[in-house]
Image (cartoon, rainbow, N blue to C red):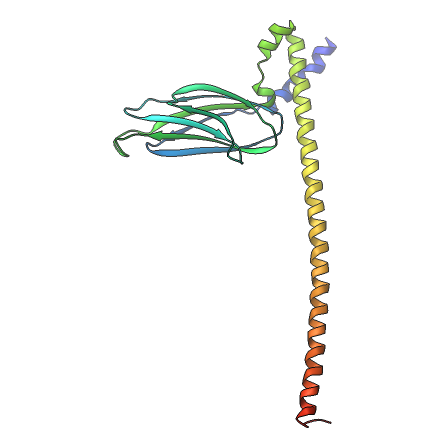
Length: 209
């Protein structure tokens, strides 16, 4: 009973941190719509999509990273699933495209439903439970363990980014300081040269002694 009592707030935490990944939007004919999301390294990403039918219309789906590497591509896409694992922290782009020879205005907009999950929410714990013969409580503990690891990784990444930003700020401040000192030295040297040049010029013209 005590174990179940301790597990209850952890289950509530799991629910709070489990985001809803379902997105619905309209895709006009002969247009392209893209969604972008940042995802950490070594994270499983899964998705399920469905596009409403339209006459004489062909749809395609492409998923690329910031380096334009193709992670998933599907022509004549009406509905389906995809999955991939990230190799590095990156910005990923999911693009739906609609093409029709009938032209705009003659074909209604298509309704696109995309349900994308990553990390803990992307894992199939029912399948894991069957393979490893886990009890329901053990499955929830596995989910909580994965969620805790995900949160720790997020905080570690945030700390790393904060350190990188701090180092960048310190480096920038040092460069600005050195550049300011260099500029002052240049201005002082230029002012001194001007004074000496004008003094020589006026002496040559015998305006001063």
